[in-house]
Length: 387
Image (cartoon, rainbow, N blue to C red):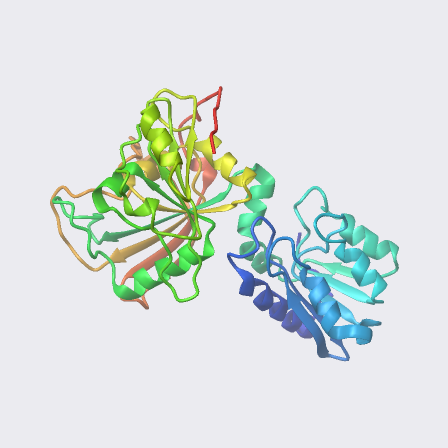
């Protein structure tokens, strides 16, 4: 949808404010989208708000509450189409109508089939002028997680890694502390605070014994998810006991020792998800199970074998690579050892690249062109999931 030429600089100013409000709740609204709302009258903001958490009032309700009776005849700027259905909260379209709003400016339509234009239609049927498409690209980016989940049933997956300039994530002796600079590592904890789930393979847990927690003041520990098809990790691994508030999930297969499965399941804050597969965990099914639990975003932190496999199976959406100005040579591990492309024509293209060097490392962010990813997805049935 293209932006309408009817929008002016004042409209853009207030929509940008609504977008600023929306991202204040980043990492806190899953499985709901990020939404900001600004109520304006006589070119002045009379109320504003944003969606804080799933199950709580939406952005429009907070903004209307702040505006009070002044909302009658005002304009509402909303980053996402107001909902038109009853969920855990009443429809926001009805709240805008009841408040006497005269005009609503919407950045993007809601991709959720439960809404998908119905909220806009309801507003227009009530005589409210509705303009759609202002700062559409910006609104789409802040809700890339929500759009991915609604359109595919899969979570949004980001692969984060740090490597040297010659493409190594550790020396050939396995030493990886530290590849990146302190500023980059601080940013990684911001990512952990933002994403629902942090994902690693058993090899990473065995070699590095990480806690996979967020160490920011006031930060939130993500769900820790370990893929361990043969259940090799130690029962004393840090990841099993590092967080009091966030569970650790071990995804495994029929190759796991039944006794060890039971011992791990008996630990506090530990869940074992066992699949009816011989040795490996069915990755796409696992990711869909995360969405069924209400977890919509995944930060993949290791290692290269798991990352390569997930990319090959079309499961990664975005990369965050930190490239340190260091050279170590040798035969150290690479960040994509599980990806084996034989011909340059099959190389995976990245787009919408952003490059930043403020931390002293080269921080490269980009999106995978999913149509370029090669390799068929395995068909795996007879899933068994044990919480």
